[in-house]
Image (cartoon, rainbow, N blue to C red):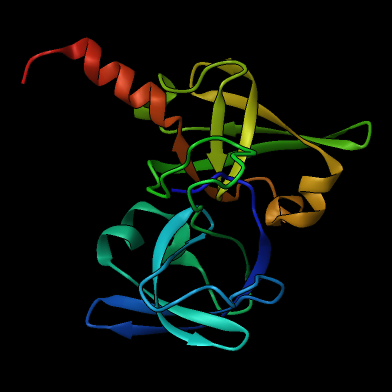
Length: 198
């Protein structure tokens, strides 16, 4: 589990094919890896990945075909920046919201515009995810926990404060860019409970 509070921005150094899957080698830069071991989880742009190799200043993780199909990791090229967060520990502060690191789908940035010192983003979610997105609810975009400002069908808006803009890759977004979306975990479970049955 994660909190959606991005801890550092890293850089994809290398991607290598492995029988259809791939291995990503990531420079963690300012992310403290002193307490990370092989087998631990790190969210990369909101995707929970397992550390398979550790270096002093980075790590490698294998990415399955399923993850490559369902997330933006399939289009990441070396040199691109990524949001990073280590898995939370019991007793950690939950500054964002409960995030599983299991991306639900890919959204697209429609517009970006300044609003005072903040940045307003308008995005489009896949139709099958729209029902989980509610005004003033939570959404995870590329691993960052954000509050939904407004919803109009499959479109929704978020506000990015200067700190989030500076400390994540969100400030670099361009119109048309694809992003990883994870909807609120609680909303999915409520829907399933309402369906009833086995």
